[in-house]
Length: 215
Image 1 (cartoon, rainbow, N blue to C red):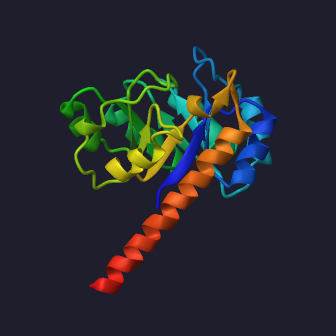
Image 2 (image 1 turned 30 degrees about the horizontal axis):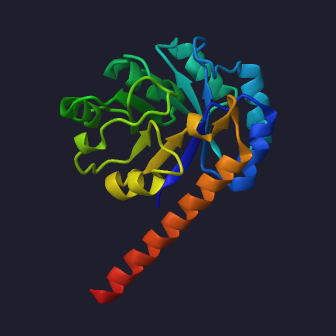
């Protein structure tokens, strides 16, 4: 089953939309240059409105580890997602300081980029085209069958969700710009993608059940 993470929450209203559609995870961008940057105070308010089942992820770029840990301790985030050039020592430091999972994002432009991602000590890897929030996918043919759980990001929307899951079988899909209208999360688009994913997961569960019956 593929889970869904919706990144870039910036409004209290976003929490009610995600609750209604029962998404799996929500992302807060704590990188000031990003147009989706959110201050910790507002992120904390949104977190309190989200259902406990929705895990919150803090997105960082070469952030001070103490600040990442502080957001965990404040109960604002459940996981950290790293989008800079953080090395293995940094990743392990965050894991040790927080005791929580770490997601490391990788820009995929060559087969070597995929292999580098697969060697990461992060709990999860995220495969993306690299620019973040542009709505553009990378070349999926660069990715071989992946045995470890990974997030797929970059240009995923209603028009290619089935293809993305059917081709790469990610543990999670990470969406942001494709679910926005005029820079704000769009309830209708989120509802559409959530229902599509539920249908895909239901069909996949049925397929596996049928295969098991035939063995």
